[in-house]
Amino acid sequence: MYFLYRWWGRYRVVVVLTLLCIALAWSIRRTEGAGIVELYRLMTLPVQPNTAKQEQLINARTWELQQRLQELEARNQALQSLLEDPQIQQDRAISAAVIGRSADHWWHQITLGRGSQDGIQVGAVVAAPGGLVGRVTQVSPHTSRVLLVSDPSSRLGVTISRSRRMGILRGQDERVGRIDFFEKDPDVREGDIVVTSTLSRLFPPGVPVGQIQELQLDAASGPQAVVEFSVPIANLEWVSIYLDGQTSEALVTSEP
Image (cartoon, rainbow, N blue to C red):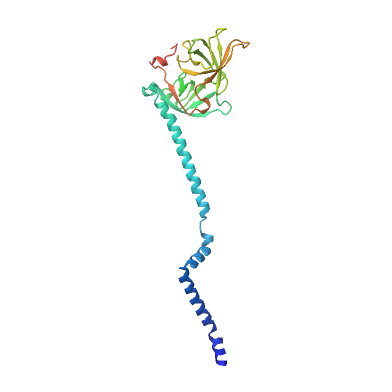
């Protein structure tokens, strides 16, 4: 008995370590090393990248690229609709991007990314899918300023397509303008189409402007009508600029 006690006191550390090694080896075999892998993961966790954060960043970047693609597709469609304009295909007009607006006068004027180096001159007519936009009032080598038909200072001679009655259109806001008729009893109805007049001194005749939305024939200053513009003035991104000196009958103004 004394012999066993001395033996245990001398070799107990070795026995315990041996048994622990055997148990560890048996555990690794049974779990196929899963415990070691998990232990390694826990030990290296402070230096591992944040997978959840990386995934969020990747998702955000993917969403951003998708939105950019949609925006490019929308801009491409808008430009394509302009390029299909017969006047542009015949080199009678050029397309231009809207590159600037005044925050205080959003529907008064726009700035285009084309200028005198592209052949643009003051007075050039500007249109977009749907009809008339305005005319160029200032030109620099690389930009042009356009007075919109929606500007309150704009004056435009117009004609009611159905009845050929004429009046003067003044801008009110980005969506509508107001016509003052020459006749006291104009033949006009809601829904009538409004185009530029053959007597206009600044614009070519027959360019669509909008549609009669509301009649005010009993106004104190004379018969009036509210016109809804056919072009979405507030959302313009691309326009067509009709260059001076065109020979197309649809673009010739009533004065040189």
